[in-house]
Image (cartoon, rainbow, N blue to C red; front, top):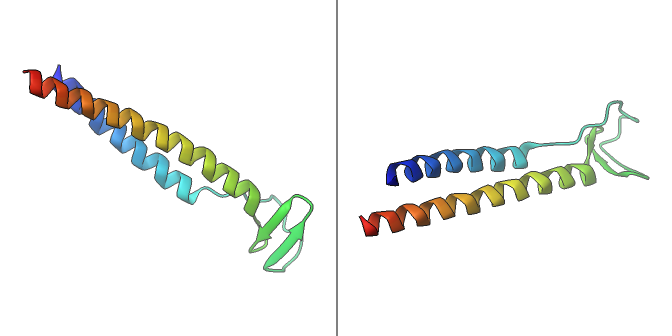
Length: 89
């Protein structure tokens, strides 16, 4: 039984790492460049480097960061269960 929770901890740790990596790299990119300026303010928000929507990118990163944090708590629960099983057996 303890081995199962060890494997679940490992798997959930890897998933957490992938989610946090993705949350740090995800970007909302516009389909067409409005002009060649580096920073432009539009009604929808700030655009960086001509094609990255800042506000939407921050929303996406926040969404994926939340998923990673939830998965991290699942990992912590698996680690606690593994520790308890180890102390009982």
